[in-house]
Image (tube, rainbow, N blue to C red):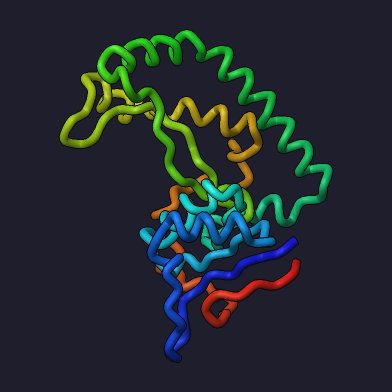
Length: 207
């Protein structure tokens, strides 16, 4: 399996690559590349990471970042504990989804009434081992144009209920590691100055 490493360039002049500024070109390059995984340095910043995240998603490539949201619990656990944690996530996620289904359906009805064209949105979260995951959320509107129940939903975290689907899929977890948002992971990495392996620009290697 091939791996693409994306990191800060060194002081030496780097060759100009149009695909790094055009998402369509980058998606095309990734689709025709033998790599299956992209590993990116969070020090590149949120804007750059979002650019790569969207491109990797469209090209069906997995994207990982090195961040402060590493899964220390599962890294130290044995395969049995990992399997046990996954079973708990799945059962608890299904149970909560069933138990909260009346509230979820009611929220969907109200949101659809005020926002006929948009019911859900997605945000990038950092999952296990730094894998970027699209987390589902209810649409509540923007700060300047929020739906009537938007602020109430955000206050009590009801806009996050669709993320139960991500947990059932095994993309996020109730415990074991923090499912931080992408910008939080970037800021945390900058704050703690977590040591990162230094690579020269872009290169590929075999796992």
